[in-house]
Length: 400
Ligand SMILES: Cc1ncc(COP(=O)(O)O)c(C=O)c1O
Image 1 (cartoon, helix red, strand yellow):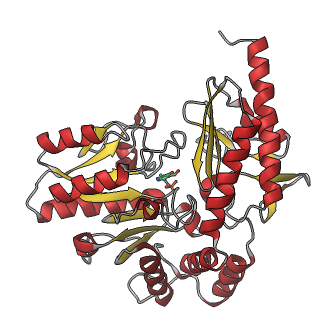
Image 2 (cartoon, protein in one colour; image 1 turned 120 degrees about the horizontal axis):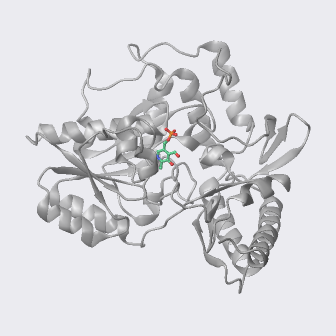
Image 3 (cartoon, helix red, strand yellow; image 1 turned 90 degrees about the vertical axis):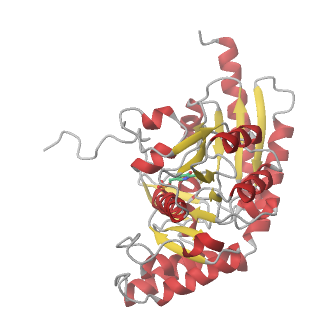
């Protein structure tokens, strides 16, 4: 037997949670933690939301899984609902963000082949994150994610994020391009927010070149940034949208949505997934989409997120070690001028869960959309204090 029964793929913290309620998690020792990470943008409705609990317990007692060989009414209902909220026309269901992106990548390649392009390629961005399967890690713009897994899947052309001139230059020189795959906000590389007109400019270039505009909303979707999908605040319609994370509030589900020609590109036999869109996952996701609408959680995320950013800005005013405080809705980041990875551990000791991303200098918060005002104040107060403490400590004991 292996000395470690779990493969060593995560550097885990030494805490195990056994129960959750709203924004709070309770560990096996009885300690409580305010969850400002939501399982990395997954539990947008908080933990044990009654609507989701009810939907999955009722469905589990009836039927969990049949097969995509048969009609699944709940899957059709969910597809209709998602099309209504997104402006898309058809949906493929998988089980994760990576699978949703795999579907988009395959769809784009087939779209290209249908146009007679034998070696279609997709523009992807530096510092992007699209998943850990071979195609999605190859699409990802982070050398650390590639290292050791070469040969990478081909057919991706890389461009700097938020750089329209670079995309225009590719358009002049790359006849095989069929699509752009891009995050509306880059989450894993540190909540990097592009210019307000970035998506609209990408839309224009895609229209001029007959490319598909494919948005990875795995992290930004499902109300996280203050609209159901982030592109809705940019006033554009993509051809393809992928989502996962917040869609099932913890029950695994991913979706690739499409409209226009992209909606009918995949045909029977082109793609599939045994578990994708099974009854249990669809029951959970239907409850999530309904609750986001009924509880007006997009507006709530937009307003409370803006308030938290304003409060952090006030608390940390004048601190020269703060590079930036930014975010959209409940996707919030504080960038320091120095590495601060220890902050996640210190915050956990103080009973708040968050993570540090980017190059170790970006404190990222992705709280539930259901966060209360007082929970938001608690996060701002405790985290601002901790930032001041570690910055002062660094000044007294500078790193080489
Ligand atoms: C933008 C984006 N795309 C794709 C993924 C991959 O999703 P999953 O881990 O569900 O495969 C992630 C996960 O962090 C993500 O943030």
